[in-house]
Length: 123
Length: 123
Image 1 (spheres, each protein chain N blue to C red):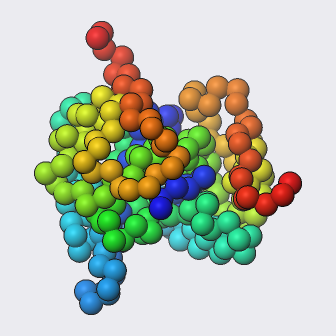
Image 2 (image 1 turned 135 degrees about the horizontal axis):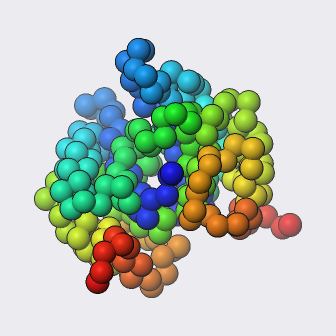
């Protein structure tokens, strides 16, 4: 039953080492994805928040690029060290992590709070 | 400016040829993604509908698996031949393609119509 409350895609696109755009893989995309998966599992929410790698998200200059659906919130320059905050604040708490937000996301308007994760546990 | 009206992820995960689950790559995931990208470009909507490959979406038994965000509509057993209908009906027209829908998507409820693509052109 595919029904994720949040689905997070991490770019792991690779370009030639001398490509002017750089690439998310060279900037640690695989490590970011692995850390995300491990930390989601550690919190017991892997069944309702899915992390996946993705091909080029077309935001190479902001890599490692991460996008969170269904709200389509784009994060840039994400590192392994950012993952606990990203999970606890946004993926579980529903609140956008401002400091990692890519610029110019008109579809968001002023919205910075989305539904908290429903873990089915008493609050 | 990352602001897609629809973002489509196609699983191209590969498993060993004798893996009991099979894999989306073995079932044509790469070809489905390539066709999707080509047909979106041909219709001039690549800037507002993005297609990406993704790692394992955990629906191997329904591969090639495709998920459309922000509405999180899951399609299974998608082939290259299904792409024109998938684009014209759903990605542009907003209407779910029932015959390709994976079973049990409780987050959809009875909803089968989503916003039409806004191409900025007169209707």
